[in-house]
Amino acid sequence: PEWSPNGEKIVWSCSDPVDGPGIFVTEGLNGTPELSLKGAFARDFAWRKDSKAVFYSSSHIVNRFNLFDDVWFHKLGKESATAVTSGSRARQPTLSPDGEVLIAVTNKVQQNQLVRLTVDKELKPLTEHTDHTQLSSPRFSPDGRHLALSLWRDGQRDIWIYTADGTPRRR
Image (cartoon, rainbow, N blue to C red; front, side, top):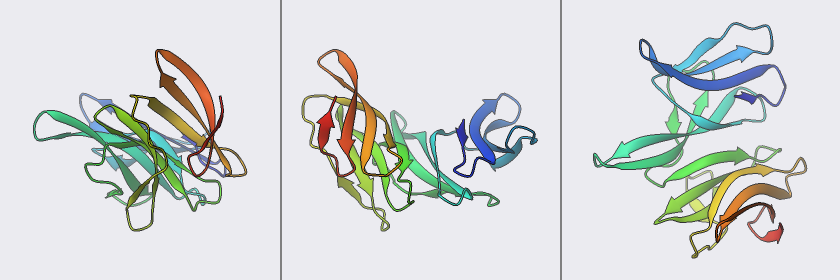
């Protein structure tokens, strides 16, 4: 689950054998859960600054055997979502506090990279890992200048601080 920036909503995804997967939203602590998007199972939500839409990552099967992640955009009150990426294996979106920058993690042949998603749906690589480094859960600092993320390399997992442009600062 993820709180909206204004603190009034919570979004999450779940699935059950009768109704299938869905994305749900509730109004804070006292609200009734409402199905916001039927048929979608999601992870790693990132709210838009105005608390009226979310970005999320979701897995899907490609060519019957490959499991790919992609980033989607869902405006609350709409019955559909829009693919932000397609076949790019992008996951774990995070939106800068000002709502201008969307960062995600991509995976290609076990090489994880931080990428910036642009308005025209291009992926701009911010890192150039070639040693099977695994990245996870990037989150912007409140001022939007840094990212905290989990990094696994050489059998060790640690928390790293990167600049918003993908430069490692410290672990």
